[in-house]
Length: 280
Ligand code: ACM
Image (spheres, helix red, strand yellow):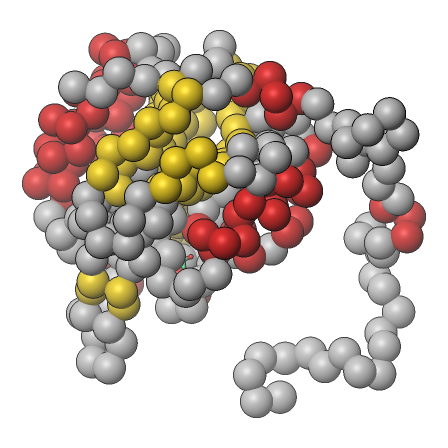
């Protein structure tokens, strides 16, 4: 299969312009799966709830979801893309999956980053995987990667490929994803953005680019630069992600010992573990 990402520099609040540009680039693309960045059509740095309300859309009835569904139907490929979602009085940092039959579903970001916490509700969908004609596609959004549980949950749910819409500002993700992919034996497509947003005094956000596709062996198949707009595509076999064996005696899923990890009940509280946020 051919999968890719489109790394570009959206202009804040210019939804029609951003969407039009993406649609015209994708219209000429020849692939099976395309991942777009987090908040790809709106920009990232919201400064008020009013702005969030103005730029968010219902899913699947909003214009962004409708446009991408239409494009997926026309071109016959799958798209994973991030957008702010309105659901009644709640707003979520969400990503949708569309395919040859149109809209397929939505994931709401579990781990909100920094000031996203001021404007969005924590996601309530949980991690989800869709069984498609090209393989099983799971979604996580940007900062979700920082929590190993995100990709582990998606891998345990059977994901072959993880679509990862992002607006990365910290430097760590590009060199960490190979390990995440290796330890879960999955493909990941991180679609980041480029450019800068300085909509808040003293809070300039520089997005780090470096979108990439990583294999279940932890190899970077293709990687974009820090600065340039790029549509990059790699060809790979999603079936590779179904083999969780390292040798005849080690299977990374069968060898897990969850009863030793305290994941399902609270671990004993060690005296050295301090709770709270910075400064506690
Ligand atoms: C992020 O989660 N947008 C850093």
